[in-house]
Image 1 (cartoon, helix red, strand yellow):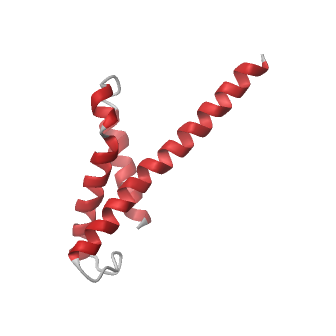
Image 2: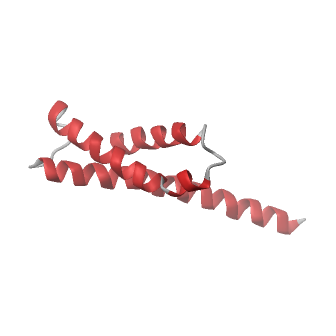
Length: 93
């Protein structure tokens, strides 16, 4: 569910702002993303069943968790690409 992934990504980024120097909290960001995704999956199942085409609440929770974790994975892909580009540009000099 792309909408859940976008919402989770935004929530996680907002959580990270005040806690950017707290490495313990940052290490559990994937758990937070999964939990928020699961909650949003339940909400979508009952509020907008056309957005969450799941046969049961259990499936909606699983879809939400996976969408939340995909937001974290997407963020990491972008972060690693930026890191690689930054490392390559520093090696050129």
